[in-house]
Image (cartoon, rainbow, N blue to C red; front, top):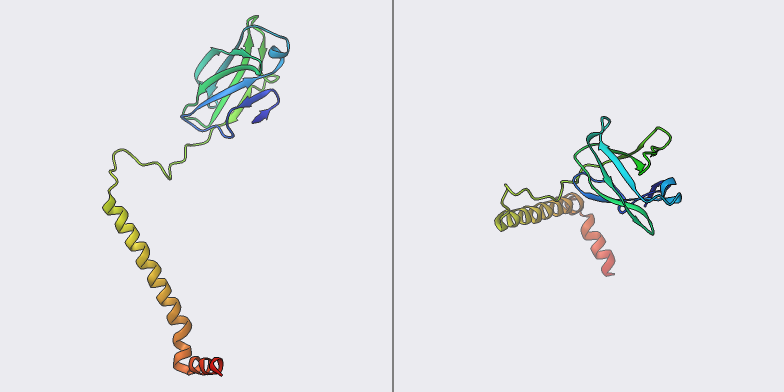
Length: 157
């Protein structure tokens, strides 16, 4: 997925505590430089600042980065001659999303089949009760007024 011209990620979303592969096909790749480094940090203050050498491939320079717990990833590129590609002084900054926790089972909380059965039973009972209330609301007034019997007799004719 291309998010910015000449920068590609191997994923649609950047999610904290995951590893992402970054591909760079910018000016250093186009100039056929041999050594390119990615200089990166997290958040507005560039926390956990790091720099790693990128691998040169046919698809561009590539590196894998483990995303930290932050709201953004900021980076720029440096070649072996200490020239920088920092997006015209803006740096490259991308939002990092929180890891979804809806389906995550915490290790401290044991999951038993008994609790699953209780949930299933309560779900079934709630469904039965809703159906009974619906039937009472719909058909009880018809039975009391006698309209229910007349419609049955009309359908039998």
